[in-house]
Length: 156
Image 1: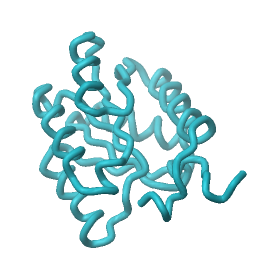
Image 2: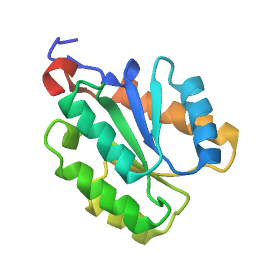
Image 3: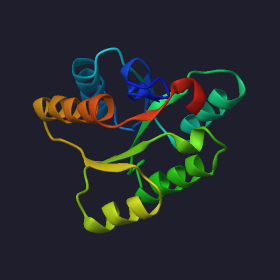
Image 4: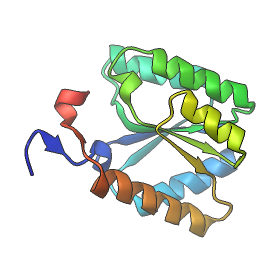
């Protein structure tokens, strides 16, 4: 493998999870730890906390997340879309971090609008623990073994 093309940084990095539901977070945290070894999930519960964390990445050296998982309904859909806009408006490299929108909604309008607003991918939240683990296994497989991202030191 060429040193300028690395497999994604998700392998040993952190994953920023923006999720307001405690029950959902517990399932996600267990599934992430089971399915994507070595990845540290970091949770924030609202747009203010998310933007504070990302600004700290830019200003005080807090670890940049390799990916952001963003709950669309925080608790309203407009809050999720507004936060997405705010993140994409931040300076590089934060605005380049892949964002996977998570939602219990499979409404085509939600999906289309999310892509039109700049997400990397859209995932409908699973309904049981086994499906959460399978979902994160697939996500990890894709980001760890399928796609290539720029070298971590050059990208972030």
